[in-house]
Structures are given as C-alpha cells and as structure tokens.
Length: 492
Ligand code: C2O
Ligand code: CU
Image (cartoon, rainbow, N blue to C red):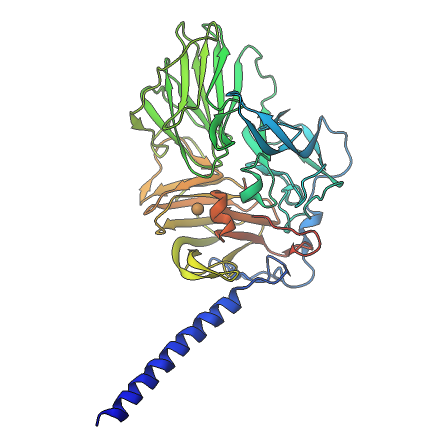
C-alpha cells in the first residue's frame, strides 16, 4: 500500500547520502596540495582597507624576495659556521638521545654578536636528508636572510651550504632554528640561541642563556635534562635570557631573590618593577630576560610542572628548592611604565586586518579533521595581508579555537595595543611571538618597514604544520621559490 512512498523515501535518502559523499569527496579532492606550489598562489588577498598596489605579487615588475638582502660587500664583524648533522648526545642524566644538531649539540652553539655587527653565518648540511635552513627568530633581517624554505630560499640539501648575512640592528635575546620540516626537526634539535649584546656591555655581569626545550622526551634547560647548577658569587649582577623552544607555553618561577623582567622578545621594557612570588608564562618561541643581584643564598629558576631548573649558588652545589610553585601571574599589559612609542592606539592606520583563529571540520591536503582556520578559511586558502612599505598596520587577533596559539610574525615587531578591549597601560610591549589564549582578543600594530614576503604563523609548530600559517606580502614582492618541487621545500 505505502510502497511507492517507501521507495520514494529510500530513493531520497540514497540521493542525500550520495550528495553528501560527493561533497566530501570533492572537498577531499580539492584540498590536496600540488607537489609544487608558490605560497602566493592559494591565499586570499586581503588589503585591510588600504589602497590596491600598482601591481600585486602575482603581476610583473615586482621585487623578488631573493634580492632583498644585505649588500654582499663589506667584511663581516662576526662569522660563524654551523654544520647540521645527526648525532647521539648524552644528557646530564646519563641517557642518550638521537638528535639532529647544529655542530653536534643540542641546543646548537650559542651565537653572540654586538649591536651594529655585520653577521655572517654559513650553514653546512652534512647529512640531514630532508634539508635544513636557519631562521633568525625575532631578528628583523632582510627578507632573503629569513631562512624559510620554499619562501625565501631552497632547503639546503646534504652536501650543500648557504650563507646568511645581516646587520645586527636590534639588541636582545633571539634564537635560531631550521624552517624546513620545522615541526619535526626543531623538536629533534635544530635550534640554538642568538644574542645581540649592546656595545660597551659590562663584562662583570653573569649573563646566561636558559634554553627551555625537550630532548629525548625529557624537559631540559640548556644541556641538563634536570637540574643545571652554576657557580655565581654573591653580589654579582645576573642576567638570565630565557628562550622557550617548546611548542607550548612554559610557566617559570624564580626563588631566592627578587628580580625584574627587563626584556620581552628581545625588546627592553620601560621601568620594569621588582618582582617576587610571581609566575611568568612564556610563549612558545618567546623570550624573557630577567635580572637580579646574586644574594648569599642559592637562586633557582624553575620550569613549573617539570623537573627542569637552573640553580645558581656560591659553590655550585646547592640542591635548590626555593622557587615558589605558585604565585600571581605577571601581566605584561600593566607591567612597567608607559613611555613614547613611534605610534599608538590613537594613530591613523593605513591598513586594518583581522586575524580570527578558529576551528572547523574540513580537509587539509586530503587529511580530514577539525582544522585550524583563519577568518574561517583552512590552509592553504588563508588570507594574505597585503601591505605597502611604510604602512602603519593594525591587526586584531582573536582566538575561538579552544587552544592557545603563540602567533609569530616574521621580520617585524608588533606593539600590543590592547587585550580584550583593555588598553596596554604598562611599558610598551613589543612582541614577535604573542601568546593568544582561547577566548582572547589582542589588538597589535606594526610598521611595514621591511619589504618582502613574511610568514605569520602559530609557533606551536605542530599547529603550523596542520595549516595555521599565513603570510604578510608587500606590494610587488614575489618569490622564485616553491613549496615542494626539486628542493623538497616544506617550511612547516
Ligand atoms: Cu620561529 Cu616561522 O618561526
Ligand atoms: Cu597554534
């Protein structure tokens, strides 16, 4: 009796299922990335309300990122060679780990230069099969020196070398790492610290990098997967340069002496106050410089929720358990005091962008899943922020993705204007790697004064590899390099 109706319903259901499968199949098919592509080929150009350029990156007459380099003439003031190779390293605990290294160690050698130095670094790849580069994280180098495989250079294959040259204009704590298969190979050991000292630095300061990372599955500070002990005489001024090479933020605490946080992401803070019983949360990829005066008792810097810590004492033997496990968390929005900045929230912005991080179901390169989105798009259809040299740019970053994202802009420093609508009221806070937590909204601004094609991505490098990455493109900038292709470039 009702048979015709039943047949009709079954047929309708089948059609719906087929349509859904067809849609999914199409989405899957469409999401597959070609074996070789230009990073400018897929994005959605976003002009941020500013004028359209005379030519865009897709058109002719532009400037190749390749040409945006420091002059090749001029004798370098400091010169380094870093050799990338496999190694087995012995950890302080006695365990061994198979790692990738610059110069046979993890972290790689600590490089130091003076402000104004012309720095020349030759990267030699001995045996890292899938290639290697060096990205100078936080250093606003000319674009061709930025070390991004497939964007500013080809990955350096085994047996090859590549030379970086740049003028060290900033002062502060930076780090370097590979930007080829970075989600895997930074974790495997291809990173190190890069410090630019001011001219006329007093040598009496105990100045030490504290690289927070994991090796062999264990939390480590520098070479110690546990406690690093150092001798420091009472009365010595101490500067600790903490670098978080991890994919997630780290909570840090200092015990045994009051301290000041004097620099964030390689930029000095203005009149930072004295702190104690305070927890510092450091973004993945971010840097904090702390200063204190060594007291008679031991001082401890601990990475909370792990065994890793640095203990300073007069005899280098102290056990050190003095760091508070809890306290109030420092808020950089109110720390220090204001001082003049080249622009501020009241400035007239040439371009205003939004960067909304979210999550939705979709396909990235044929992989189904809940994908990271920027302004609702999944990789590689992410926005490209189009700017002109000289533009004052404002970006509002929001995060509704359920996870924290340390957003890292290459080649520029962002001035934090506000968080969740509350204006910055402390020291000017310049960041290159901003920890944006779920539910937060930041307004930041930067001056577009470094032409080229710049990555802007999450420094949880696993997220970047899943597609949480986009670019800022200057008018006319184009790249001769491709992702994939012969060099096998894979920046993330
Ligand atoms: Cu520290 Cu694009 O990276
Ligand atoms: Cu992320």
